[in-house]
Image (cartoon, rainbow, N blue to C red; front, side):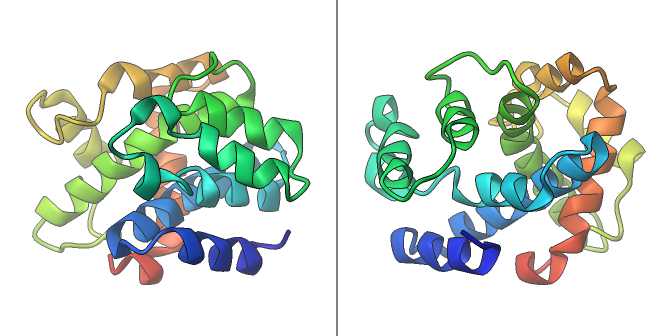
Length: 181
């Protein structure tokens, strides 16, 4: 499946505009991370894009979140590593591979980055930098839903938190027009 087809699939299943934007943001992060690690950029971007495909039908039943997406994608011939990363992001399996850990951490970091951009005077991704985001990261009450320990799992990839933030910010800047940031 190509990225454009994946985006159409996402829009068939997800009607909430901000959730679509979240998935695009995570896709941006995943693409830049794949590039950094020398992985398949398109595959990683699609994984990020589709990770919350089932959210609107599972939001009141978190035990099913991710698993419904896997059922949909299995029938479409998606590879096991994509399905496992989607299973790992809500905790249905331990995040162990690069793709799994990247998605697990980037999912929440993308929200923290968006919140950081929105509170900055520029209201844009171009107006913020890694030190600005790190200051927000250290503020426990800021974007409290962005579990800092889950984001710190990125360190299992052999990179610093700051580098992970830098890569995700770069990836999100590449899709900033789609995000309205």
